[in-house]
Length: 418
Image (cartoon, rainbow, N blue to C red):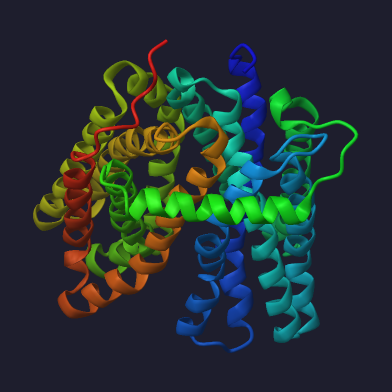
């Protein structure tokens, strides 16, 4: 492995930056386009889970395939070169399909876009542990998350004026940014020499066979192994993403129907959370390296739980502008806690295996996090239907506390000693 260089990680972060630009735009405007076809909210909700379905079906397998891939460029870049341009193309076509007025064509493009994006997400993220020694992976993942957060904020703030000018502009600009960002990764990030071959063609049949074999081995390590740290870590990821996604999905509704705050203001509160997360992503990696990843994650979960309890208490005692100002503060602090959790979790997972298998383990990480994103909205929605919006934060706190318990049982995944 080459000497570690922080600037190289910032360049690699453009891969996650490109992905993070697209999804906020997709989630913000595609449901509006679909509503023009007189679809019910339930059907629109199902369509909006296609990305998560592709993720849980494809990311673990694509990650293991990339582990076994050997080409002149390396083992991850072929997937980026194939998936990113296709994803950008189909993303850019979405508003034009809407203007044509064909739901069938729009669904075809949406499905191909989600498929293409799933082709390279695991490989582009797995590049981080490929080029980063164990003791630097928390810091590197902090940089990756900072770049992703910057991409998301750029999409949120630039998307509105672009959309107001022309509904196609956010999609065209977003697609172009993703292409440029991933081109920077291809041009300036060199994969380790042991994964690059010269003068040979990629052996597709052998790659698929070995990738399938590795996937089965990884699943055995999760479900069959006597040592349960990997299982407990992945369950922790699932549980805290259920708690997080419930807030992300229903907070604007909670703000409007329970607190009497407009949905746009509720979205701004979530924006403060995202900004805080992005700013604190960098120090979170250094804190994890110094304090220990598991302790840092537990600290982050504790901060979030306390903040959510404060929201529950404040919403009962205070109303109006004072409550709103306090919400901005509490959610800013929650963003710090979420950074401590999120930045240090992927390094814990990939440091439970050898370097040859980090793509597959990256896929496992995304399988459990994306599975949570599928489970959380209907489960939290049913809970709210039964008990009212007042219970939203209790729902999230419950799953965060469960994750605190399971992560306490994790015995591996700390950085290797220098």
